[in-house]
Image 1 (spheres, helix red, strand yellow):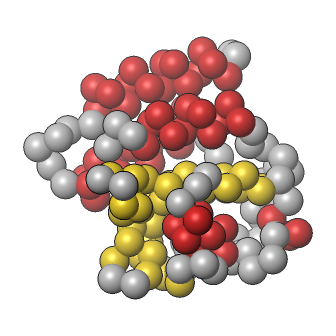
Image 2 (spheres, helix red, strand yellow):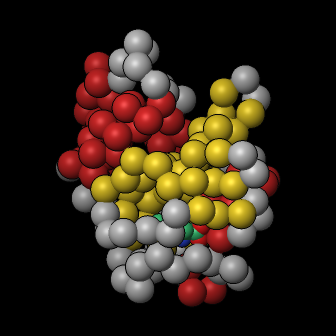
Image 3 (cartoon, protein in one colour):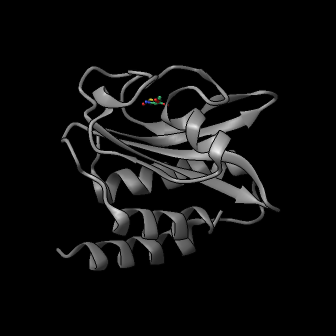
Length: 146
Ligand code: SME
């Protein structure tokens, strides 16, 4: 299936899944599972801003680190610089936090509300160079649904 087609189905399902009457954690739990069902990547989940750190939120995948400092790792960079990071080879990223030895590439998308980052969506792949600008485009649309 083409990437555009795959994401278009995913976005429709995400729109009907997200429930504005519950909190972010509930919606992130279902959304991380939905993303996993459609995209099948190694690790898909959220880190939420709690105090001065990113704290592990709902995810699908292997056990992960529970907290990340601002500016550390790919997630901390995305939070600090308020932008999506696509890393083709995590082993070349200075300060990458290796939660799983099987991860080779990664995309981190900030979740922004009222101009503030309240979480990041992190997706890890066992393949090198798995993510591109199309993934960024669609994943930014998906997190904006929250
Ligand atoms: N690799 C991330 C840490 C989170 S885990 O991949 C789930 C990072 O460098 O920020």
